[in-house]
Image 1: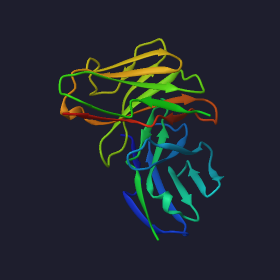
Image 2: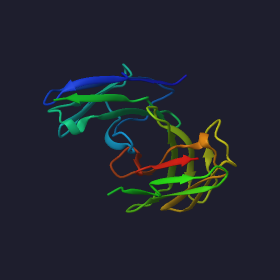
Image 3: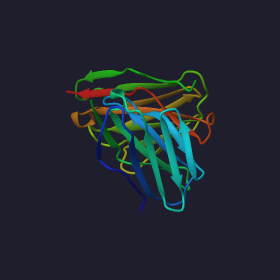
Amino acid sequence: GQNIDQPTEMTATEGAIVQINCTYQTSGFNGLFWYQQHAGEAPTFLSYNVLDGLEEKGRFSSFLSRSKGYSYLLLKELQMKDSASYLCAVKDSNYQLIWGAGTKLIIKP
Amino acid sequence: GAVVSQHPSRVICKSGTSVKIECRSLDFQATTMFWYRQFPKKSLMLMATSNEGSKATYEQGVEKDKFLINHASLTLSTLTVTSAHPEDSSFYICSATTLAGGGDTQYFGPGTRLTVL
């Protein structure tokens, strides 16, 4: 079967750095996406990785290792507004998007 | 760019009525739109994939006659929940794809919260 694993919940301190991991087992791979979703709102696109390595976008970076079936989202200089759920999604060989259950990130002052 | 709107944002209806939700891509043409539902504290569940000018492809377990999807143009798709019941209460979200930005990224509408009394 196809599976995306990410931690259910994480807690971090304002101003700190947090890394949210995502591991996947899918039939084929055509890219990995990270989305941010605030409570009661729709997801917003954060990043896309299709090649191995690190993609940096301001305070957010995303890393991919296809051989390990692994990605992480790194958030630096955490702000209270970063409290949200972070969804990892993988596009499989049929170009279907397989979603993880999301990681709820709680930021404390 | 890549803005998707959804209307209404919130709807409350009586059991047995039908509700139509619109999804529009405002600044791009979307050949494919997706409809999701999401229960509280759960991940997104894909209901159907909608291609302009053709019938929607429904995921297993999603009733076609219950959730009618019409993709009338490259910028508009509608989801109609027919004869809604309380168990249909959920957060419905649409998304649309554009090749801009690479990777066939899905951009999401703001969602519609449906409450069936």
